[in-house]
Length: 239
Image 1 (cartoon, rainbow, N blue to C red):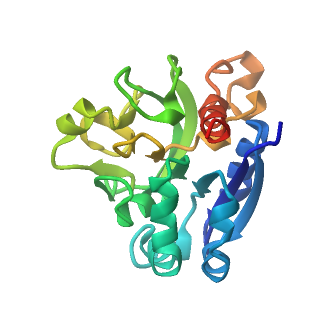
Image 2: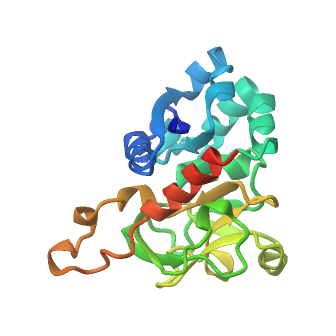
């Protein structure tokens, strides 16, 4: 059986592209990394991909707002092709800066603002999907996921969080302390059809046990983020 092909989109300043590619590979996909500018020059690479990941980091140094310039690169360069990819039902995930990109491109609802306390947050958190989540990436996950965060603009805002929950579009909530003031403790959301996921925490940074800060004591080792990527790869393989 041929492994699904995963395309990891990066840009100037992103720094989690290799981590995301590794997560896809451990989940059973063949991953390649492409800069947004390269993708604009070769948009047919989207035709060959079965799932997409938009990497986290600090694209363009967040100089004009987190994710703004990378989102502009994508919408100007491959906007129609990216929308067609989403409309086809193929899985897409955007993590941290990638989540910010997905909201700025309007592929996901809501927006990300500065952390409520005004400080950059870098620590481990615990998140879990609500049972009502319709997201293909969270299918069958019934235990919390441990993973780190690293963001200054991670406060998720939406005018009607209750309607998102009712529609099954809340994909993750913080089970630990809400680190940024996100409305309704929301850590991640999906689109109406469930194939596009955006989240602020970094599950790609806990796909093997030794990445956990308490791995020598066995802490949290059953709460890997890898299952998230296995779900995405399985959804892509089933299409």
